Image (tube, rainbow, N blue to C red; front, side, top):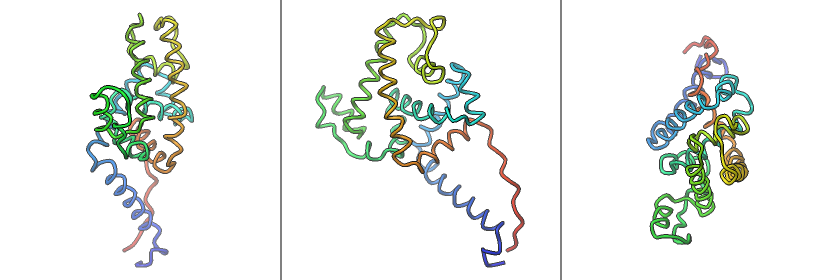
Length: 221
């Protein structure tokens, strides 16, 4: 039937095709964005071994997962900015569209890095805060890496003394950084909810078994 209103099966297939085309154009044709997503998925899988509760969150699509995901996206960007800048730019274009390197005080190398990266001064201050916290963790007596410590705090609400003994300065720095992280996490979700929902759905699909689509409805051409 050439009239789409009488052919719900064909309409459903065309809608699926359009959605797949849009996702492919956005995430597959942009190599840097695709690389960032793949790295993020790999690191979240590693985080599941550090904090097993995260595995259950992913499998159940628990509401807490969608609080943890934006925090992890920011952490991966802060740890490796140039690898994840395309993903962050796709979600927060106003933060990554203009270079403000010439306005930032600091070494020539720092200004050059910011100018090349093209993120704004507030993101740069956030990045420097992360690096100072990371330095404190590296100097602490704890044998775990910074990523593992942050993951334990975000998923389990903290890290036990049996896992790692942090000194007072390092513990306070981690707690303060996580408080600073929270509004950035909310901005990631709320700036463009449609883009965030699409990105988070792709991450969840990569982290879990793909759900079976309902059986196609019959259609005639």
